[in-house]
Length: 416
Image 1 (cartoon, one colour):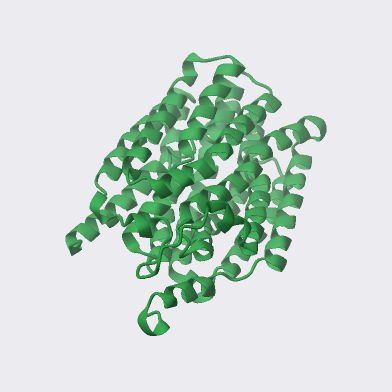
Image 2 (spheres, helix red, strand yellow):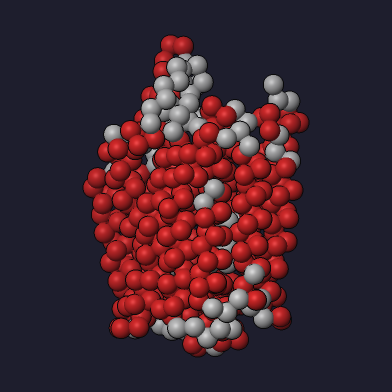
């Protein structure tokens, strides 16, 4: 049994793990577009293709990654190995110039990074249990966004002084911090049955992962909503980065960092709001608010090319992505609780939105080359509006499902 001191240490370790891993889990992200545009002078379509290939590689491994996390008890070691691979794949870029090698390294990094989301969710659920999971996820996301803001500030400053290559070495430093943080999480504190979605005191029925996924209509609807959300969202910041590069190449990286920092600072209170209120208000109202912001943001980007306007609009990403990012694992937990297939379902839905995220840069790059940036932003805004309508009309509230499952495990059927 864990002592209060051990519980506090595990909580702090999870906090710092999410903080440091924020700069590692997504690789270079939008900085890759700036680096390839500024240093290698690539065309937007080629940049979009590399990012799409990396996204496709990740989506093919999301579901197996979730299944791996469901089965393994070495969750901490898997995270450490993945962090090293992601960082190594990015540190090789200064010595690579060909499309094939750049695409290969980013694909390898994306594959390794596919374990982070299910691993963090599993460790959090295994330590806190289902009742405290919502608050823990809100805290996870708050520290993740704080870490993103911190690293983006440093990346902007270092890139201004030393060039775009500085972000590579910042990632290496954050990797060291994440490895130290995960090593401080007590292995004995993780209940691996609870971590995969079983409910304590209930019989363990091992349904197949596909059976859980295909038999749940809400889970399938949510998967489509996630895919459309990321199809609309993933390319927006890289497009803004490319527009900034055309306006002022020297300031492109610092201004992209400003966009990231602005959004991440807004995401922190949004994640905290989810952790505090999702149990009382329900999941759907908060999800609808997050989805509604995205089409509005896409349309606003077309109104001006002024760098400060673009940074200001990026604040809206903090509301939309902040709410969605915190609610995503909570909704999946609600819909899979008691099945023992939480992480494989999380991986499968990550695959669904990975499909959208992978196709987004390629689609946007083609629209940019044929019709310009404004047409690309409006195309993405239209897709986002479709995602909002589907969520509103077809997705049920999931909070009551989780409460009912918990009640079955409590004598008398009452959840405190």
